[in-house]
Length: 424
Image (cartoon, rainbow, N blue to C red; front, side):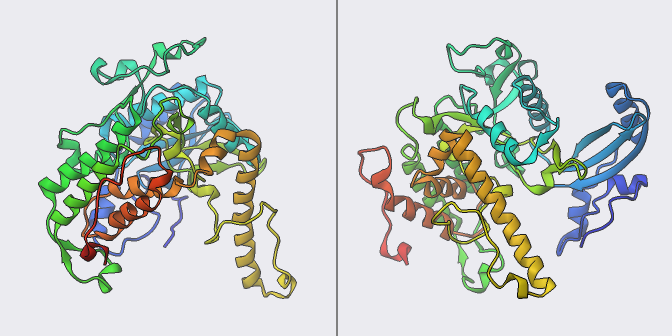
């Protein structure tokens, strides 16, 4: 249930107003309640921008990890303010990395959050980011914010650095939420940075293995799957699956460090409509927010359509043709036309992203064409999820990667096996 964001009372600024929760609502609302000094925030904005006093402060949107405010100043300029929820992790690293990432992007000609044309600029920005020769997998920080022992160089050796970015920035521990969720923040885990891409894959499996061994317990699968699979599963079976994943993890990525699939790239972690602000007057992007969990990762794992440009259909189009309305469109009633219009809008976004990738970002297009792209990504995604009673997804991903084993860059035999009982 949506609510009005224009209420500027201080209590509304502190509280979650975007909807209701079906269960544990008091806990979920408490997690999202963030009290702050409104007057001090306004004074800080005025001093930082030099654009006069704040004349309006209102909530603009709420995401999974933060609340976003629109601030208007005396000279009619506008500022976006992002305040994280209390449960947003990692506590220090997330903010430090986001500030460093935004500063680094600006220094490399990525206008954040300057105005951009909508149609081509997302792909244009990604092409710029994909051309940056990062040295490692992890997240971007200011050197001054991290101990030397958890830093690696920003760029690969021998990279030209006319702006001397490498003097100020480095690659440090990942801000991937799953490395810091719950008790993981208190565990001694390998959080990067990783110079060898496969070490990242192993760290994901070892993280969940350590957590499940310490905190896992028998449980059934979540709703709605518990209606079909009511049995309680042992966490020890999940531990066995994670051990199988760790046996496979050294092999999904290309062997050669120089392979384009291993190229470390930076992408927006959650490019959705709620994170992209567009001017209603100019139809230009005015701000792209929510980079607090941005990570540098191998291209072959980062490749794919952002959620904003995902294919709305179950199957991929056989040809790249502009979407067209159905022949019977003129005879549809208004409600049916509205549904068709929304589907066409999403199909056009998918189509345009494909077209501009082909024209401007060939290395991304090449990675997207990899036949093992999704099986590889699904395997690593499912191995990185917390034990919740579900054995099916990780087991299925392991079985599926077996079917593509002959396409992976290894001459080793399939290193794991399943019993007939496990397969059924």
